[in-house]
Length: 173
Image 1 (cartoon, rainbow, N blue to C red):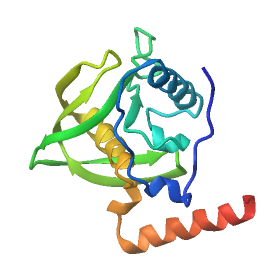
Image 2: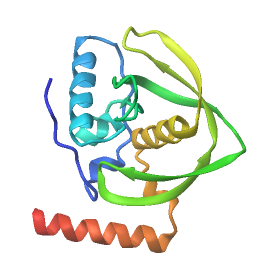
Image 3: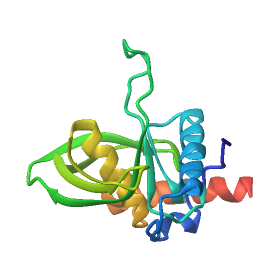
């Protein structure tokens, strides 16, 4: 396992549409392991492969609370995930993103979604997501489609955050 570098806005790779995973094999499992290590180190609750510059439709997620009584991690992997239905009811969560560090805004999304994906054994799974899970899976699937949570904000807020991160990138780069 290895911690990979997370790409940061305004990196153009964040706008790429990720390709489907053809076969769930040892390479895909290793990538998922690296993604978990990177995500936990960041720390974050979700990571799309494109955020470590790998344009594949792969997401890692762990919504377990750090102060959870079980104290254990609950790592989950979603390969080629897709939303097959979404509720008309909406909910608002404050979102952040490892590729847009230390920036948080409220985003409105469907309150519940039904998703279909492959697990690490290559089996097709369908399940319903609500609450934080629904928000997180939608946020990460957006990454696979080249969409960022700031795209849901007003043009003024979006322009401000883009300008801020472009300035930072010029200083660092």
